[in-house]
Image (tube, rainbow, N blue to C red):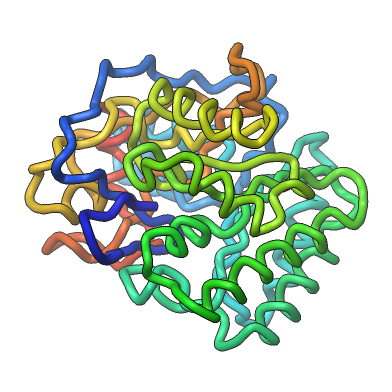
Length: 334
């Protein structure tokens, strides 16, 4: 979820951010249009998501304007993350896809528990070993099988191999685990899998990215994902994704547009970490849709839940993945 300056990866969590190369020019580009919530997206809106609870709480407290602004998030479909093996994760996945099916919608899920996740950064953790991950992903895939769902698989996992955070046998094992995970989710019809490939500001060599995706089994998936928990513009992602796709025979991809409405923060904001970790002044991006109008782009998705922290990188910022209502409000009103 970040692009790393020179050597190491400071990560983030259950939706981290990403840094851009601090030596590169500001890629912010032009602000993008505010999203509109429509009933034709086809993606499932989780009714009890944190934003929905926050809207109710602010209405009760008399914060009517803030509640109205936050409704833009509460009424938009966002991905649901699975980032641990705590008891109940199987049932949570089953209830999600069944609720989506009952509503005639498609659930979007993010498995995020690969061993050595996030290289010990804000979102560090993951499965203790390969055997635990295999068992977990097998269970998760079984719960989803037979339903319409989109799976954005393991944000950052492939780029962290390319940037040197995961090396040697651990890197080879990771790529094998990703290929096995794709196979698990693709055993039945209905599930579309997109293997994460980072963002335009991270690994600039698209040939390396394409080769690593192939090593991780992307040919058996439906495509790859970009910009998860990052802020790079949609235009930058389309250009980058198309270049990667060219190396993969025209493979489709999806883009996380949850927070890229104003593009990325300047590279000198606070420090390198401040470029991707809860930067101020960001905004919601284009609404989730499959009608992208762009060849090879299967969908714009809100993969990162707008309003969940990237990490405790500011005095008032909660840990990665925790709901932060005031940051959510900023995204909805900028």
